[in-house]
Image (tube, rainbow, N blue to C red; front, side, top):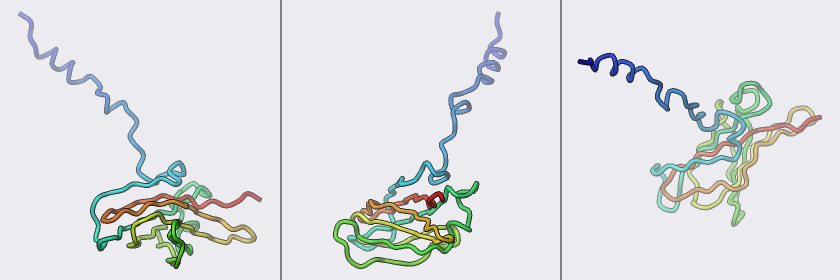
Length: 145
């Protein structure tokens, strides 16, 4: 009579698909996420508004969150479809911007002057939906000399 114990032990040691698959990279963890957005239900915005969370990262350093490139950089948000008054400010020390905005399409631009070069992080079409949180990733890049 065969024992099932050795067969079960061998079966339990076999690799699973999740062990051999590459893990998904974290959102906005490298420059390939430039222009990417994620939308989540919920948020504290009033009717007709949504929350926008923008993370500025850089391709100018080994570390995408290098504070030299992303911290305290001036930015502007503007309704892309209608124009109008810009919302301005500076990124946080982590390169983050979080604002409650009216629903619609918004353009985002952050800039930084480094010597004679102006480095930019631009996304011209970030959709903010009523009652949702939209996360956006924008890469600050500098022109080559």
